[in-house]
Image 1: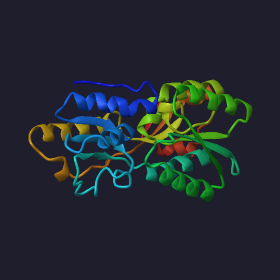
Image 2: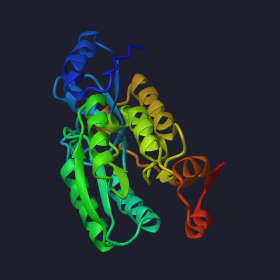
Image 3: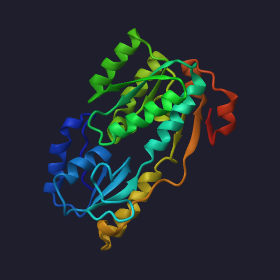
Image 4: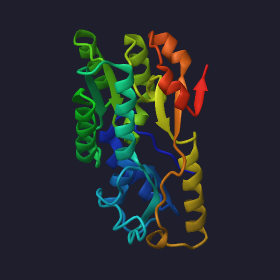
Length: 255
């Protein structure tokens, strides 16, 4: 198993992809943004995706049912989740509140995510702006601005790269005690797959490819279980009161 880590800098991904491809592996495994860098450099080595939002729109596969390329794996459901996350946030902040979305500017699904987020925010009467970060330093700069012009809440573009920056984001969210959606980012409530589920599915794809299956013939899968999680400890740390309407719907409450 050979691993390369960007250290939270998406600009390093093309060089890291070149390093891995030069090793001539039997299969490559990547979350969305790194997968784009890999697919741009090899059309022969199998690539297994984890958590790609829209691999068809990204040009990674021809369709979910018939990939037709060297790429297969898990397709995410971020478009559906963003509407649910904004719905959750609307229960935590007043109508007319100003919320911010932290996003990866290199994310292949960015434009579709933004359209879905703006549509959902408008329905709930929230004012949404987008903030783009390329590394941990830019995350801290963004939160320094939030300290001056405090948003009423935060959501996140759930690209693989933003997840790489989750610890830095979490530190800043808790420091400013901001209402946020996404437990991994310091938020008190979120919808998410059971931990590790995507990677367990990806392991099955890797196993099948190593036994001779062609990625082009392996239909992509989507998560079948999404849980509503409430973290009461984070809520207490940020001084946030979780409405009973959310608690009653929760699949998991972390004390």
